[in-house]
Length: 112
Image 1 (cartoon, rainbow, N blue to C red):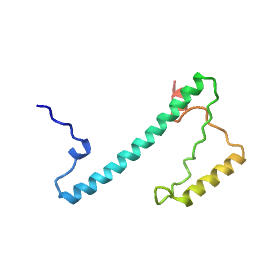
Image 2: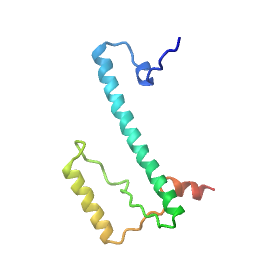
Image 3: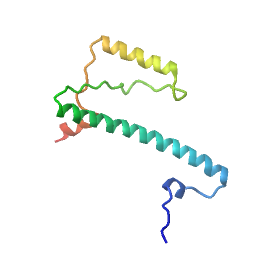
Image 4: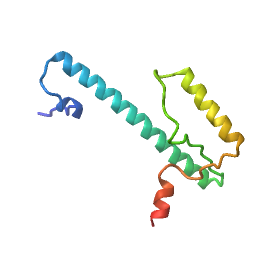
Protein backbone atom coordinates (compact mmCIF):
# COMPACT_ATOMS: atom_id res chain seq x y z
CA UNK A 1 0.00 0.00 0.00
CA UNK A 2 1.41 3.41 -1.00
CA UNK A 3 1.44 6.11 1.62
CA UNK A 4 1.30 9.75 0.73
CA UNK A 5 4.32 11.78 1.78
CA UNK A 6 3.50 14.52 4.25
CA UNK A 7 5.02 17.97 3.97
CA UNK A 8 8.05 18.23 6.25
CA UNK A 9 6.63 21.23 8.08
CA UNK A 10 3.81 19.06 9.38
CA UNK A 11 6.20 16.39 10.58
CA UNK A 12 8.07 18.91 12.75
CA UNK A 13 4.99 20.12 14.63
CA UNK A 14 4.72 19.42 18.33
CA UNK A 15 1.44 18.13 19.63
CA UNK A 16 0.57 21.29 21.58
CA UNK A 17 -2.99 21.71 20.43
CA UNK A 18 -4.81 22.40 17.20
CA UNK A 19 -4.57 26.21 17.35
CA UNK A 20 -0.81 26.18 18.02
CA UNK A 21 -0.28 23.81 15.10
CA UNK A 22 -2.34 26.01 12.78
CA UNK A 23 -0.38 29.13 13.77
CA UNK A 24 2.94 27.30 13.40
CA UNK A 25 1.86 25.86 10.06
CA UNK A 26 0.74 29.28 8.75
CA UNK A 27 4.00 30.91 9.84
CA UNK A 28 6.03 28.17 8.15
CA UNK A 29 3.93 28.42 4.99
CA UNK A 30 4.57 32.17 4.75
CA UNK A 31 8.31 31.61 5.21
CA UNK A 32 8.34 28.80 2.65
CA UNK A 33 6.42 30.83 0.06
CA UNK A 34 8.62 33.87 0.68
CA UNK A 35 11.78 31.79 0.23
CA UNK A 36 10.36 30.12 -2.87
CA UNK A 37 9.56 33.49 -4.46
CA UNK A 38 13.01 34.86 -3.60
CA UNK A 39 14.89 31.95 -5.16
CA UNK A 40 12.55 31.78 -8.16
CA UNK A 41 13.45 35.42 -8.83
CA UNK A 42 17.17 34.66 -8.55
CA UNK A 43 16.71 31.73 -10.92
CA UNK A 44 14.97 34.05 -13.37
CA UNK A 45 17.97 36.42 -13.23
CA UNK A 46 20.31 33.53 -14.15
CA UNK A 47 18.02 32.45 -16.96
CA UNK A 48 17.94 35.99 -18.37
CA UNK A 49 21.73 36.13 -18.10
CA UNK A 50 22.14 32.92 -20.12
CA UNK A 51 19.66 34.13 -22.76
CA UNK A 52 21.42 37.50 -23.02
CA UNK A 53 24.85 35.89 -23.39
CA UNK A 54 23.61 33.39 -25.96
CA UNK A 55 22.05 36.17 -28.05
CA UNK A 56 24.88 38.68 -27.67
CA UNK A 57 22.79 41.12 -25.63
CA UNK A 58 24.41 43.07 -22.77
CA UNK A 59 23.19 42.00 -19.34
CA UNK A 60 22.74 44.92 -16.96
CA UNK A 61 21.28 44.45 -13.51
CA UNK A 62 20.49 47.07 -10.89
CA UNK A 63 20.68 45.85 -7.30
CA UNK A 64 19.08 47.34 -4.20
CA UNK A 65 21.96 48.25 -1.84
CA UNK A 66 22.24 46.06 1.25
CA UNK A 67 22.15 49.12 3.51
CA UNK A 68 18.67 50.09 2.22
CA UNK A 69 16.37 48.89 4.99
CA UNK A 70 13.07 47.20 4.22
CA UNK A 71 10.61 49.28 6.22
CA UNK A 72 7.50 47.89 4.55
CA UNK A 73 4.61 47.05 6.80
CA UNK A 74 2.39 45.26 4.28
CA UNK A 75 2.68 43.33 1.02
CA UNK A 76 2.52 46.49 -1.07
CA UNK A 77 3.61 49.44 1.03
CA UNK A 78 3.31 52.65 -0.98
CA UNK A 79 5.66 54.60 1.34
CA UNK A 80 8.38 51.94 1.06
CA UNK A 81 7.95 51.74 -2.72
CA UNK A 82 8.28 55.53 -3.00
CA UNK A 83 11.47 55.45 -0.89
CA UNK A 84 12.85 52.72 -3.14
CA UNK A 85 11.94 54.69 -6.27
CA UNK A 86 13.61 57.83 -4.86
CA UNK A 87 16.78 55.86 -4.11
CA UNK A 88 16.84 54.42 -7.63
CA UNK A 89 16.33 57.87 -9.13
CA UNK A 90 19.19 59.35 -7.08
CA UNK A 91 21.72 56.60 -7.83
CA UNK A 92 20.68 56.51 -11.48
CA UNK A 93 21.15 60.24 -11.81
CA UNK A 94 24.58 59.97 -10.15
CA UNK A 95 25.71 57.40 -12.76
CA UNK A 96 24.87 53.97 -11.33
CA UNK A 97 27.38 51.24 -12.24
CA UNK A 98 25.33 48.30 -13.52
CA UNK A 99 26.12 44.76 -12.41
CA UNK A 100 26.93 42.57 -15.39
CA UNK A 101 26.30 39.15 -13.81
CA UNK A 102 23.57 37.65 -11.59
CA UNK A 103 23.98 37.74 -7.78
CA UNK A 104 26.62 35.33 -6.48
CA UNK A 105 28.24 34.75 -9.86
CA UNK A 106 30.91 37.44 -9.34
CA UNK A 107 31.98 35.74 -6.09
CA UNK A 108 32.42 32.39 -7.83
CA UNK A 109 34.44 33.96 -10.64
CA UNK A 110 36.88 35.65 -8.24
CA UNK A 111 37.18 32.55 -6.00
CA UNK A 112 38.77 30.43 -8.73
